[in-house]
Image (tube, rainbow, N blue to C red):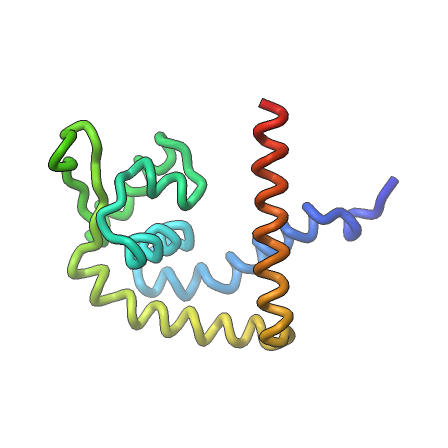
Length: 147
């Protein structure tokens, strides 16, 4: 049997748990959870995404993204409104409160990320991003194959 520390998925899971332990307290100071921050970042890149497209970008199904957006909306960071062309489609927008909070939260995130990533060179970070993208493609292909 293979040792747990040699299983890639165990290493990935442990890395994600450590990531949450590092960032969650910092994000909490700004009134957001880590997954909520991911949504806010996506909207900062492209405000007004449909709820379905936003879910696709943060890997959440329709029910999960609906709940997640509702939580963020309840905290005043986003608002939803019906699409002008199809009232059944909901678009999600950042609020002024989010736009005010995000630069300071992003600066705090960057400072922590620098500390956490200091063991990696810029080339290492680039290679890691490329490898993770490649691995994600492999996971997506495997998901389609087992469906």
